[in-house]
Image (cartoon, rainbow, N blue to C red):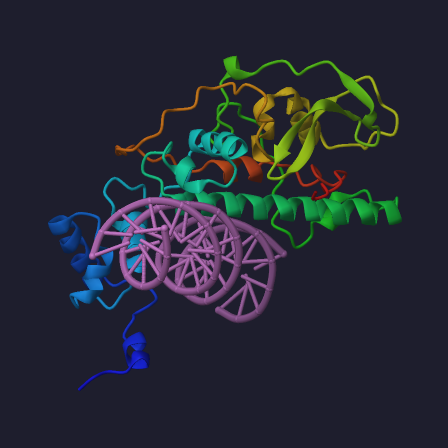
Length: 287
DNA sequence: AAGCAACACAACCGCCTTTCG
DNA sequence: TCGAAAGGCGGTTGTGTTGCT
């Protein structure tokens, strides 16, 4: 009996893969190599599209994948640097990260952008409400119900920050007066760094400028004191691509080799932000 | 303990490019 | 040379997990 087109379409399976399907897919790859994905369905081995089979192999079944491993601080830095250089070319960026797929990089970047957007959104709310009500300078009430942890301590060698002492450079001296943020007690550097497609200016503490300063907590001041640190901004976005990176980017990995996974990184660092860190920072306008 | 928000991850969709007959 | 099929890639969505209130 001849099946109709609609019936054939119904045969295409979607959703999560089962272990048996993975096994069939692996057998096919072992026998024929990672190609002829469409033949898997045409041979009746799986009721999946060739695309789906390829994606499954590339993202989950390929050897030497770092499945379930968080991005290390080094990987984060590489992604950030390469994203500023290549843009959203995830497949290309992934070639520099052994064991990582374009999907991994994409998901990592997406999560990071969402997190930063949320932080900036919160800071926007805080600053606007603070403008409306100058008395409401307390961040504790603004952060009620939000998962904001106070900073515990600063460990320059902690993962997620990933900074070696010798990597720290001194911030440039040039300051555009128009970029001053007296209410922050900081000055914006002339050299912007990219935050996705947005631009943020580097910030420099002006220890002498006490005018209009917000009384930061000791933890906040400690963090602000670190603003000279170029990698401090890794959490917000990559340095301007025109600026020479401070670390050497690895060569692309086309033959990924297994590596030990390092857990905990960006989250550790983000979690160390004090609650009032972004309260006075205005959100960045999209172009 | 329940509810909620944030997060991480897997998988699909649609578009573009490449390959092949 | 052209068109169809396959492959590749980036964007998006759905779902499970985790941590906090």
